[in-house]
Length: 227
Image (cartoon, rainbow, N blue to C red; front, side, top):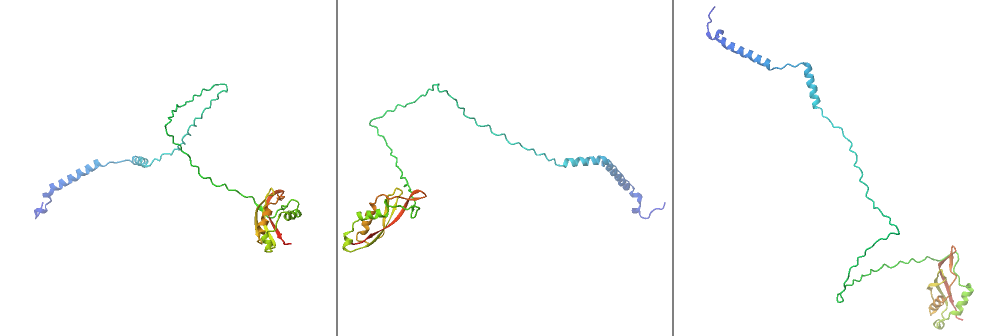
């Protein structure tokens, strides 16, 4: 065997180092083989299926809650029927009131509130009805009444006042005369005399509407003429 020229390139010198490295590699490989686990295909699929079932969320089924029962009916009062012949004892408690003559008694007088005034609804007054009111006996009896009861005022005579005084009044349902007013006068005391005579007239035959007596407003001219 030919001797190498340089000793540092001689492999025999490093034989122990290479042997140690190989031994470590073999030991590491054996250790990895022991630690590695081998699984069959069926076992892997079963484990995977088991994991999927565990991860699935289980939703509980909702239950319909029945409504609460209605409250019990209120107890009704029982009425006991007692015969008319049965006697019922009633006890009256009367307090003994001692009144001192010298004692002062406070008397409270209630204050009466003013009552609102009663609203009186007046009946409707017609101006034209089916049957107008009429003086008893007609127009001739009316002229006779005025000629017998009316006096010509002295003031109107001295001033020679003549003319017509127009009056208005209401004939009530019973024929009475109310609300006498002067529509147009001539003065000299003639207006007042005409009002006096009209107020003193007897009851008229009332006016009627649909067969029932009603209040009617009536206008009457009274002529004053000097003779």
